[in-house]
Image (cartoon, rainbow, N blue to C red; front, side):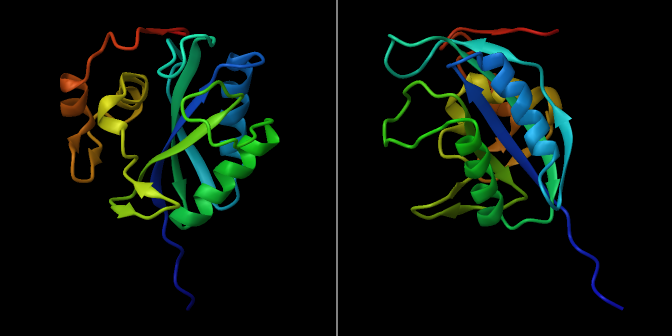
Length: 169
């Protein structure tokens, strides 16, 4: 009898601030739901937040998706980058600049990893209200490896920096 495949929980941060960002985020949810060997189990509301990087750029629309996947973390990351590319994302090396779509692998199972290609959990997850607040909507009791629960992290993050507001409640 063949071994049954294992399903791993993964959480994806979604952001966009160019070319109808709400549409890019909503399409990203659909793209994630269509990933091979994966199921999109939860979607947060959409949030508007001020950019962290250069101020001369539009506000971001952010959300978080919860997946169950059979893909290893590195294969899931490759799929996320494929989706970004399909939305017109071109990696220029600029940090925190404007983009059509940004997909960040925030947490993958209980894995901790720090390689040039992939860091898990996402290295700045505990500092970002535009990640933690939508994540708390769909997984408040999630333990972020090495950092604590999402609920605890939300209690220590600056909720007002950058300014963030829910769009579709």
